[in-house]
Amino acid sequence: MPPRHPGPTAGQSTAQATAQATAQATAPATAHPRQSPPGTGTDAARELALDPAHTPAAIEARSFAVIDAEIPEPRPFSGPLWQVARRCIHTLGDTEILPDLRLSAQGLRNGVAALLRGCTVFTDTRMAAAGLPLRRLTPLGVRVMPIMSLPGLEALARTRDTTRTRAGLELLAPRMGGQIVAIGNAPTALLGLLDALAAGAPAPALIVGMPVGFVNAAQSKALLHQSPWPHFTLLGRKGGSALAAACVNALAEIALKEKKGETLHP
Image 1 (spheres, rainbow, N blue to C red):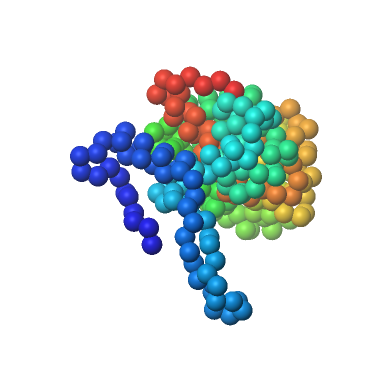
Image 2: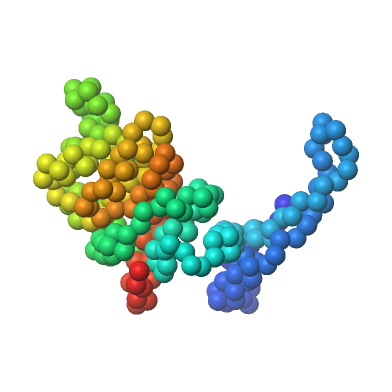
Protein backbone atom coordinates (compact mmCIF):
# COMPACT_ATOMS: atom_id res chain seq x y z
CA MET A 1 0.00 0.00 0.00
CA PRO A 2 1.53 3.38 -0.94
CA PRO A 3 2.34 5.82 1.85
CA ARG A 4 -0.18 8.52 2.63
CA HIS A 5 0.77 12.19 2.54
CA PRO A 6 -1.97 14.19 4.28
CA GLY A 7 -0.22 17.53 3.95
CA PRO A 8 3.07 19.40 4.16
CA THR A 9 5.77 17.64 6.19
CA ALA A 10 7.81 19.38 8.85
CA GLY A 11 9.78 22.20 7.31
CA GLN A 12 7.80 22.00 4.09
CA SER A 13 5.62 24.90 2.94
CA THR A 14 2.17 24.51 1.44
CA ALA A 15 3.55 25.69 -1.90
CA GLN A 16 6.24 22.98 -1.75
CA ALA A 17 3.61 20.36 -0.95
CA THR A 18 1.48 21.52 -3.87
CA ALA A 19 4.49 21.37 -6.19
CA GLN A 20 5.19 17.84 -4.97
CA ALA A 21 1.58 16.78 -5.73
CA THR A 22 1.79 18.31 -9.20
CA ALA A 23 5.06 16.50 -9.87
CA GLN A 24 3.43 13.23 -8.83
CA ALA A 25 0.49 13.95 -11.12
CA THR A 26 2.56 14.57 -14.22
CA ALA A 27 5.12 11.80 -13.65
CA PRO A 28 4.88 8.85 -16.06
CA ALA A 29 3.40 5.60 -14.84
CA THR A 30 5.87 2.98 -13.56
CA ALA A 31 5.65 -0.76 -14.03
CA HIS A 32 5.21 -2.95 -10.96
CA PRO A 33 5.27 -6.75 -11.19
CA ARG A 34 2.11 -8.46 -10.01
CA GLN A 35 1.56 -12.20 -9.84
CA SER A 36 -1.36 -13.51 -11.85
CA PRO A 37 -4.44 -14.22 -9.72
CA PRO A 38 -5.02 -17.87 -8.76
CA GLY A 39 -7.06 -19.78 -11.29
CA THR A 40 -6.01 -17.79 -14.35
CA GLY A 41 -4.19 -20.78 -15.84
CA THR A 42 -0.73 -19.21 -15.74
CA ASP A 43 1.90 -18.56 -13.09
CA ALA A 44 3.79 -16.01 -15.17
CA ALA A 45 4.08 -12.60 -13.56
CA ARG A 46 2.28 -9.83 -15.41
CA GLU A 47 3.60 -6.31 -15.66
CA LEU A 48 0.97 -3.76 -14.64
CA ALA A 49 1.74 -0.10 -15.22
CA LEU A 50 0.69 1.68 -12.03
CA ASP A 51 0.54 5.45 -11.89
CA PRO A 52 2.56 6.89 -8.99
CA ALA A 53 -0.14 9.45 -8.09
CA HIS A 54 -1.68 8.48 -4.74
CA THR A 55 -2.87 11.63 -2.96
CA PRO A 56 -6.27 13.17 -3.80
CA ALA A 57 -4.73 16.30 -5.30
CA ALA A 58 -2.19 14.35 -7.34
CA ILE A 59 -4.76 11.84 -8.60
CA GLU A 60 -7.11 14.62 -9.76
CA ALA A 61 -4.30 16.58 -11.41
CA ARG A 62 -3.00 13.43 -13.11
CA SER A 63 -6.51 12.55 -14.31
CA PHE A 64 -6.96 16.00 -15.82
CA ALA A 65 -3.55 15.73 -17.49
CA VAL A 66 -4.54 12.39 -19.04
CA ILE A 67 -7.81 13.86 -20.34
CA ASP A 68 -5.96 16.88 -21.79
CA ALA A 69 -3.55 14.54 -23.54
CA GLU A 70 -6.27 12.26 -24.93
CA ILE A 71 -8.34 15.21 -26.17
CA PRO A 72 -5.79 17.63 -27.65
CA GLU A 73 -6.62 21.07 -28.96
CA PRO A 74 -8.57 22.26 -30.83
CA ARG A 75 -11.43 21.26 -28.54
CA PRO A 76 -15.11 22.18 -28.71
CA PHE A 77 -14.72 24.07 -25.41
CA SER A 78 -11.98 26.30 -24.05
CA GLY A 79 -11.16 28.22 -20.90
CA PRO A 80 -13.66 27.80 -18.05
CA LEU A 81 -16.05 25.83 -20.27
CA TRP A 82 -13.30 23.27 -20.82
CA GLN A 83 -12.88 23.07 -17.04
CA VAL A 84 -16.56 22.10 -16.79
CA ALA A 85 -16.34 19.64 -19.70
CA ARG A 86 -13.17 18.05 -18.35
CA ARG A 87 -14.70 17.52 -14.91
CA CYS A 88 -17.71 15.85 -16.57
CA ILE A 89 -15.39 13.53 -18.50
CA HIS A 90 -13.42 12.82 -15.32
CA THR A 91 -16.59 12.01 -13.38
CA LEU A 92 -17.82 9.44 -15.91
CA GLY A 93 -14.36 8.21 -16.90
CA ASP A 94 -15.52 8.55 -20.49
CA THR A 95 -13.93 10.79 -23.11
CA GLU A 96 -16.58 9.76 -25.65
CA ILE A 97 -19.25 11.97 -24.07
CA LEU A 98 -17.59 15.13 -25.38
CA PRO A 99 -19.54 15.41 -28.68
CA ASP A 100 -22.84 15.17 -26.78
CA LEU A 101 -22.03 17.74 -24.09
CA ARG A 102 -23.95 20.97 -24.44
CA LEU A 103 -22.38 23.75 -22.36
CA SER A 104 -23.07 27.42 -23.03
CA ALA A 105 -21.08 30.52 -22.15
CA GLN A 106 -24.30 32.18 -20.96
CA GLY A 107 -25.03 29.24 -18.68
CA LEU A 108 -21.53 29.45 -17.25
CA ARG A 109 -21.78 33.18 -16.60
CA ASN A 110 -25.21 32.80 -15.01
CA GLY A 111 -24.13 29.88 -12.86
CA VAL A 112 -20.97 31.54 -11.57
CA ALA A 113 -22.83 34.80 -10.86
CA ALA A 114 -25.54 32.92 -8.95
CA LEU A 115 -22.95 31.11 -6.83
CA LEU A 116 -21.16 34.37 -6.07
CA ARG A 117 -24.51 35.77 -4.87
CA GLY A 118 -24.87 32.85 -2.47
CA CYS A 119 -27.73 31.16 -4.31
CA THR A 120 -29.58 27.97 -3.47
CA VAL A 121 -28.75 24.86 -5.50
CA PHE A 122 -31.86 22.71 -5.86
CA THR A 123 -31.11 19.03 -6.59
CA ASP A 124 -33.55 16.32 -7.55
CA THR A 125 -31.96 13.73 -5.25
CA ARG A 126 -30.00 13.52 -2.02
CA MET A 127 -27.28 11.75 -4.00
CA ALA A 128 -26.68 14.82 -6.16
CA ALA A 129 -26.65 16.98 -3.03
CA ALA A 130 -24.10 14.65 -1.42
CA GLY A 131 -21.78 15.28 -4.38
CA LEU A 132 -21.52 18.99 -3.52
CA PRO A 133 -18.86 19.32 -0.78
CA LEU A 134 -19.18 22.11 1.76
CA ARG A 135 -15.55 23.11 1.27
CA ARG A 136 -16.55 24.59 -2.08
CA LEU A 137 -20.00 25.96 -1.23
CA THR A 138 -19.66 27.33 2.31
CA PRO A 139 -17.11 30.05 1.34
CA LEU A 140 -19.64 31.23 -1.26
CA GLY A 141 -22.60 31.21 1.13
CA VAL A 142 -24.39 28.66 -1.07
CA ARG A 143 -27.18 26.46 0.28
CA VAL A 144 -28.16 23.05 -1.12
CA MET A 145 -31.80 21.92 -1.16
CA PRO A 146 -32.55 18.31 -2.20
CA ILE A 147 -36.12 18.14 -3.49
CA MET A 148 -36.47 14.64 -2.07
CA SER A 149 -35.99 15.99 1.46
CA LEU A 150 -39.40 17.69 1.38
CA PRO A 151 -41.90 16.08 3.77
CA GLY A 152 -45.07 14.48 2.46
CA LEU A 153 -43.79 13.88 -1.08
CA GLU A 154 -45.02 10.31 -1.34
CA ALA A 155 -48.62 11.26 -0.58
CA LEU A 156 -48.41 14.29 -2.87
CA ALA A 157 -47.04 12.16 -5.72
CA ARG A 158 -49.88 9.66 -5.32
CA THR A 159 -52.41 12.48 -5.41
CA ARG A 160 -50.89 13.90 -8.61
CA ASP A 161 -50.18 10.48 -10.14
CA THR A 162 -46.53 11.29 -10.75
CA THR A 163 -43.07 10.78 -9.26
CA ARG A 164 -41.98 12.29 -5.96
CA THR A 165 -39.29 14.39 -7.64
CA ARG A 166 -41.75 15.92 -10.10
CA ALA A 167 -44.28 16.57 -7.34
CA GLY A 168 -41.59 18.24 -5.23
CA LEU A 169 -40.27 20.27 -8.12
CA GLU A 170 -43.73 21.57 -8.95
CA LEU A 171 -44.07 22.60 -5.31
CA LEU A 172 -40.74 24.44 -5.28
CA ALA A 173 -40.80 25.90 -8.80
CA PRO A 174 -41.94 29.38 -7.63
CA ARG A 175 -38.79 29.59 -5.46
CA MET A 176 -36.30 28.62 -8.16
CA GLY A 177 -36.03 31.98 -9.92
CA GLY A 178 -32.38 33.05 -10.15
CA GLN A 179 -31.16 29.86 -8.48
CA ILE A 180 -29.40 26.76 -9.85
CA VAL A 181 -31.40 23.58 -10.48
CA ALA A 182 -29.33 20.38 -10.86
CA ILE A 183 -31.22 17.30 -12.04
CA GLY A 184 -29.18 14.11 -12.39
CA ASN A 185 -31.63 11.27 -11.96
CA ALA A 186 -35.29 11.95 -12.78
CA PRO A 187 -36.43 12.84 -16.31
CA THR A 188 -39.86 13.53 -14.79
CA ALA A 189 -38.34 16.31 -12.70
CA LEU A 190 -36.75 17.94 -15.75
CA LEU A 191 -39.97 17.64 -17.72
CA GLY A 192 -41.85 19.10 -14.77
CA LEU A 193 -39.47 22.04 -14.61
CA LEU A 194 -39.87 22.75 -18.32
CA ASP A 195 -43.66 22.60 -17.95
CA ALA A 196 -43.54 24.96 -14.96
CA LEU A 197 -41.39 27.43 -16.89
CA ALA A 198 -43.72 27.28 -19.87
CA ALA A 199 -46.58 28.08 -17.47
CA GLY A 200 -44.80 31.20 -16.22
CA ALA A 201 -42.65 30.05 -13.28
CA PRO A 202 -39.58 32.26 -12.64
CA ALA A 203 -36.55 31.05 -14.56
CA PRO A 204 -33.52 29.60 -12.75
CA ALA A 205 -30.16 31.19 -13.42
CA LEU A 206 -28.97 27.82 -14.72
CA ILE A 207 -30.50 24.41 -15.30
CA VAL A 208 -28.08 21.48 -15.10
CA GLY A 209 -30.10 18.76 -16.80
CA MET A 210 -28.35 15.38 -16.59
CA PRO A 211 -31.06 12.73 -16.02
CA VAL A 212 -29.97 9.20 -16.87
CA GLY A 213 -31.81 6.15 -18.13
CA PHE A 214 -33.93 4.59 -20.84
CA VAL A 215 -37.33 6.21 -20.29
CA ASN A 216 -37.53 9.88 -21.33
CA ALA A 217 -33.99 10.75 -20.22
CA ALA A 218 -32.82 11.49 -23.77
CA GLN A 219 -36.14 13.12 -24.68
CA SER A 220 -36.20 15.43 -21.65
CA LYS A 221 -32.66 16.61 -22.34
CA ALA A 222 -33.41 17.20 -26.02
CA LEU A 223 -36.36 19.36 -24.97
CA LEU A 224 -34.15 21.25 -22.52
CA HIS A 225 -31.63 21.91 -25.25
CA GLN A 226 -34.37 23.26 -27.51
CA SER A 227 -35.58 25.62 -24.76
CA PRO A 228 -34.47 29.24 -24.28
CA TRP A 229 -33.36 28.69 -20.68
CA PRO A 230 -29.60 28.72 -19.89
CA HIS A 231 -28.53 25.14 -19.32
CA PHE A 232 -25.86 22.47 -19.30
CA THR A 233 -26.82 19.01 -20.53
CA LEU A 234 -25.53 15.76 -22.00
CA LEU A 235 -27.63 14.53 -24.90
CA GLY A 236 -28.61 10.88 -24.95
CA ARG A 237 -29.17 8.31 -22.21
CA LYS A 238 -26.03 8.91 -20.18
CA GLY A 239 -25.99 11.23 -17.20
CA GLY A 240 -26.45 10.81 -13.46
CA SER A 241 -26.38 12.57 -10.12
CA ALA A 242 -22.58 12.57 -10.03
CA LEU A 243 -22.48 14.31 -13.42
CA ALA A 244 -24.95 17.00 -12.33
CA ALA A 245 -22.88 17.58 -9.20
CA ALA A 246 -19.68 17.70 -11.26
CA CYS A 247 -21.02 20.65 -13.26
CA VAL A 248 -21.88 22.60 -10.10
CA ASN A 249 -18.52 21.74 -8.55
CA ALA A 250 -16.68 23.01 -11.62
CA LEU A 251 -18.66 26.27 -11.46
CA ALA A 252 -17.94 26.59 -7.75
CA GLU A 253 -14.20 26.23 -8.38
CA ILE A 254 -14.42 29.00 -10.97
CA ALA A 255 -16.49 31.19 -8.63
CA LEU A 256 -13.99 30.72 -5.80
CA LYS A 257 -11.15 31.84 -8.08
CA GLU A 258 -13.13 34.88 -9.19
CA LYS A 259 -13.84 35.71 -5.56
CA LYS A 260 -10.08 35.75 -4.99
CA GLY A 261 -9.69 38.21 -7.84
CA GLU A 262 -8.83 35.83 -10.66
CA THR A 263 -10.99 36.97 -13.59
CA LEU A 264 -11.91 34.12 -15.92
CA HIS A 265 -13.74 34.41 -19.22
CA PRO A 266 -15.44 31.60 -21.16
